[in-house]
Length: 274
Image 1: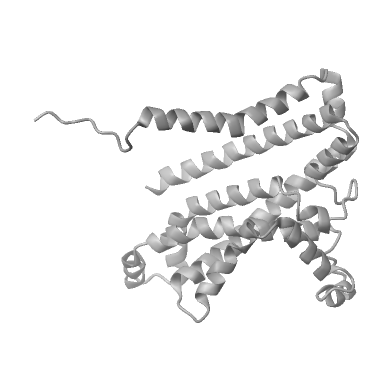
Image 2: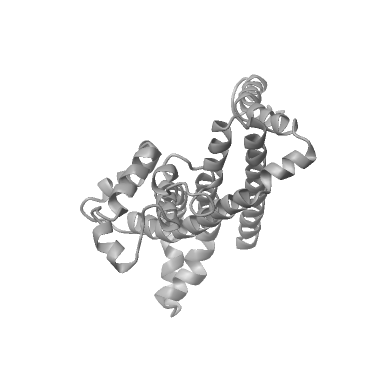
């Protein structure tokens, strides 16, 4: 009997057409508009807008704090995912639900809460500031709020991979005389590595574009605590739309390039894990 070629979904051509249409409308069209607006500047004006000393300081702070926050999220998110997957304890469902709180909570609220906690007379600031640890209106504060908004991406990426790991592989490793750390390093970690890379990429990308929480805790001081999205808003308030879109183009290009590199590393790790 001749095999029948069946599609997974009926009306594949129609659904694909709608997918491409809305993807173009919601993603490609705005990005194209940014490039067209930035293209209205001459090369000299474009370079003068995106490579000022203030802009370079904002780029360095934006990508530096995002990178540090993503690394912290990989460590904390991996640990939280491990606890939620491997252990049963009272209140586990509550903690699991709290992981998603940054996704449901307006980031501006998170920024206000963190700022009020770490100011000199805040609940935590009154103890930390005398020790020289300042969380409000500093780069440390920016990292703290970026960890807050990026944590769910790592936890939710690692959790299902941990749940799917076959316990028999760990038992076989232990029966062959491996210690717990050896089992983790040579059995569990290679399987988790692609998920950790994906979680890092998601948290990093989320942090680069974060504005709502950072604007309240950073103090927005040029050359010190001003991130690139805040600089874009400052240019828009000055009605310098071309300069604002030029800075946005730089963020888009750098972000996309770094995501390509991270995705390449993820694909490479998946190939070598087989």
